[in-house]
Image (spheres, rainbow, N blue to C red):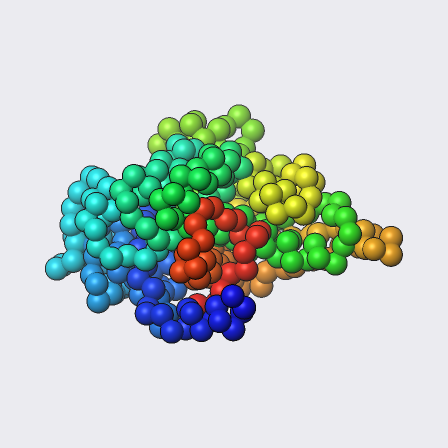
Length: 340
Ligand code: NAD
């Protein structure tokens, strides 16, 4: 199938019915990103205490209002359901949903892989997208490749900002070189308050010396605040265990030990502490050593750089699924498709 046929296939198909699992910082941003889209419609959202479903499409602002004022989208008038098994209940409902963005915390480190297992067991077929971050979490998902193929699921992993947009940029930039020497990702994140992105901040703390996913998960909100007080709200992260490395290795670009990820997160200021960038250094066929740098605009938020790519990869995943291509793919091997 050529590109023209592929575009026609997606253009002529119906709106993609999307579910968002997890309705914290990224889940709510995802709902807002989808609101003006013509090719996708948000039909389901779930948080820890409930879910909401509407085949005609949910109103992002109403979902956000229910979540923020009452603590769950399960309170949404006419569409909400309160349940402590929101993901299971939504999957088992059998509602027609084409794809899900998993905007869930990956705490413990096998939580998102366990959700993938639930989908496979349920008999649901479609596209799943995550913005998962750790190498060891992606490794767990990769072991499920054959199960996903059998289940008829096209799973797109590592499709946020990093891993995601920046990993894909590295894969593209690598094409100028015969050999890749180093890929260095440095992210700057500015958020007004850490409570808007609790899982993201806990998962970042888990990369600090002396912490891991289990200790970070066990921290109370007061303990997180006490830690942030000590650092003036700033987390500086180096040599992170980030799946950009395994994704670039799998894509055949460079061995994982040539990929470095670090960054600075300011939890008290929406202004980015530094410009997020990826530097790709390599040797050209003429023997020249050079570095390509891709810098994200400082005005683009973490949410914009995660949710945009996540839906771009969901659309790409739908194209694969419609052709009967199932299994697991990363952001470094598939081009995202712009969602109109
Ligand atoms: P958050 O803490 O703001 O929200 C998490 C949401 O998940 C909440 O709505 C909560 O109710 C829901 N939830 C928790 N357990 C659940 C369960 N068992 N069933 C149903 N819902 C459940 O999270 P966030 O800060 O938006 O982060 C979400 C994820 O995105 C994290 O894993 C984070 O690491 C990842 N992330 C990735 C990137 C990237 O570039 N790849 C960037 C930022 C964040």
